[in-house]
Structure formats: C-alpha cells, structure tokens
Amino acid sequence: MKTLTIAALAGAVSLGVWAFIGLDAPGVDPMISNSIPAPAAGHSYTVSNVVANTACLGERGTPISSRSARFTAGADCDAVWPGLSKARTWTNNGDGTVVVADAQGEAILTVTEGDGLAYEAVEPAEAMVTMISAD
Image 1 (cartoon, rainbow, N blue to C red):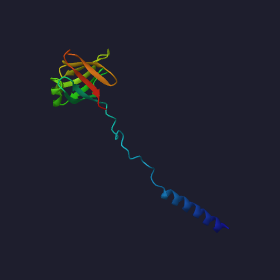
Image 2: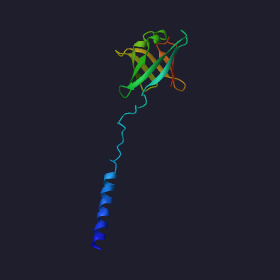
Image 3: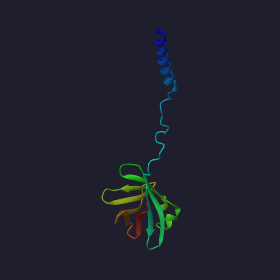
Image 4: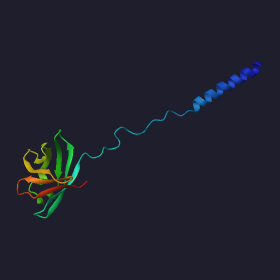
C-alpha cells in the first residue's frame, strides 16, 4: 500500500509539473499604443468664385487655439481669390463669421455660415467666394 501511495503521489506531482511547464506565457496584446491614427481633425472645402468661374480645395486643419485652426490652400487657390494660397489660419469669431488670414494675421477673407456646411464671403464686399464642405 505504501508503494501505491508513493506512486500516486509521484504521478500527481509529475502531472502538476507537466501542466505548469506546458502553460504558454500569458498573452500580450501586440498593439502599440496610438498605433491607429486618429481621424483627421481637418475639414476640406471646395472654394469657388462664381464670377471668375474657378474652384480649388482648401483645408481647415488641426486646432491652434480654442478659436483658431490651421488653414491651407494650394497655389491654384490664388485663381479663386488673390492671396488665398498664403492663408494659414481659420479663426472663428463666435458671431457666425470666420476670418481666413495669412501668417501675419492679415485677413484674406471673412466668411459667414451659409446653408448646411457652406460658408459665403462677406469681406471684402466684392468677393463672390463660397466654401462648401468637401468631406
């Protein structure tokens, strides 16, 4: 009986050791934090001049402050409105108007909210420019 008990104990210990050795290391999530890019903070607009019959693409980008964001427009936007390619900021005035300005803060266009996701130029007065959401 003593031999049978020792054999049973040895078998149980062997089974326990085998089970412990057979375990894989704990699963580690291989995903690296921030590996999935956040959605773009920007918003694209088709910028049109109805008088000149021209259009280009402008983009309101990442926030700079609580009221301002970066703004970019390609060189082709100068055909839509002179100097628009030099625009660097989009500043919401809080009264329904937005100033699109150059790097020195000089206003290039002042637009106001139109229908839906559209904006219409109000200054300079002769600017017949609209910005319609392209997203």
